[in-house]
Amino acid sequence: MSRSYSRGFTLIELMVVLVLIAGTLTMAAPAFGDWLAKSRQRNLASAIDNTIALARTEAIKRNGRVIICISADQQTCTQSGGWEQGWLVYFDPDNSRTLNVNEPIIHHESGGSFSRLSAPGNKSVKSYLSFVGNGKPKLLGGGLQAGTIFVCAPGQNEIRVVMAATGRTRTEHTSTPCPP
Image: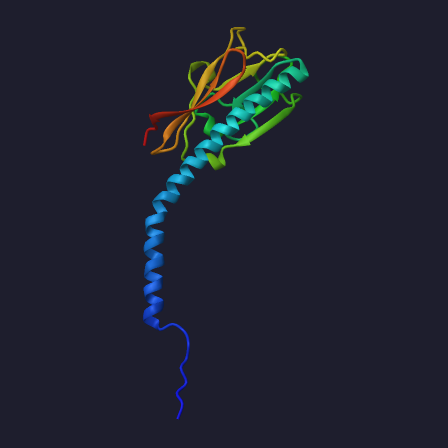
């Protein structure tokens, strides 16, 4: 008489494997959350840096003022909040710093993917950046504009997007902790 053996897993073996997988995922979840926060923070800093370069190039190309302003709705500029809300880039030939109906929007960035981040600018870049036809950043009053936007994610170190008075930018990864 021959016995037939079935091949497969017993219920106990399957349960042990599932417990091991659950344990591994539990240990990996905080690291994944940390990685995701860092990634979103780097993406915001990169998007700001790229937008500044775009606005500067467009000002030179159009030989006129191009403005980047904070915009939560991607249709109007706002004076409050940080750059994490999103922004608009538009051509401002009348130098009014008001987005008029006839002024084209060159680019807009939605802040939806930047939730839980903060990106305040210091005084001179708090709510807008402005480039004139030669590519220099200029305040609406005529003075040179330079400043820093501080990109933060809870539990991470600050990333700074620094714009020089020439309009060139650099991104600095610091050891300054972000507020929780």
